Length: 216
Ligand code: ADP
Ligand code: AMP
Ligand code: ZN
Image 1 (spheres, rainbow, N blue to C red):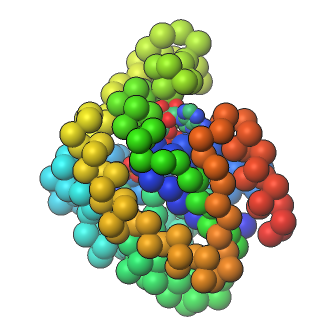
Image 2: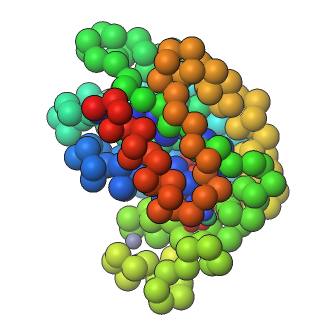
């Protein structure tokens, strides 16, 4: 199963990812996580991406496409993958189609988590993230069992430096301009499932499961 999860920053893509990946036994590939890993390790790619990420702008397409191509060629992607945060432009989507065509595979479904922009700022400024396993929490809507600590591995939670109001507002604007056109792109291909992402996470998960089971 090859799945794309679309939606604005804060829509709940990361929150839903683990459930989908367990269900289909596929890896969760988050380009944001891959870039943050490169940033932490101060790799040449991390150094190139930093200024864009700090501002909440998109990293140039060619850097992202090469990163994803290397990742999806790995053995653990033979049965499929869940792409989270990629593609983010029509050019990235076309590049992904080309890579898949060369490998004689194709995308099975594009999930679109629909959340109105006025809710996103609140979700992202209240988000706390585990730097070890990338699990997202929310100080109000989805708090960890022990305040400030990841339920899964006990790591101290952090607030991402791009989860501050000014950067969040730019990320939402960038989404609307550059990424939202992908909704039409995948609808035209007959792959789109739009899900109301304002519902409880468990309800969203059920709807995703029903959608993907129809493609199995
Ligand atoms: P994305 O990966 O799409 O940027 P996340 O999955 O990290 O978004 O979720 C953003 C924030 O919203 C997190 O703080 C998360 O706990 C919270 N959140 C996720 N899904 C829901 C939901 N259905 N209802 C309320 N809050 C949610
Ligand atoms: P995310 O974790 O998905 O919110 O991504 C964090 C940041 O990484 C974004 O604001 C971008 O700067 C960068 N990024 C992640 N994925 C992409 C992508 N597909 N295209 C361009 N930039 C990306
Ligand atoms: Zn953790």
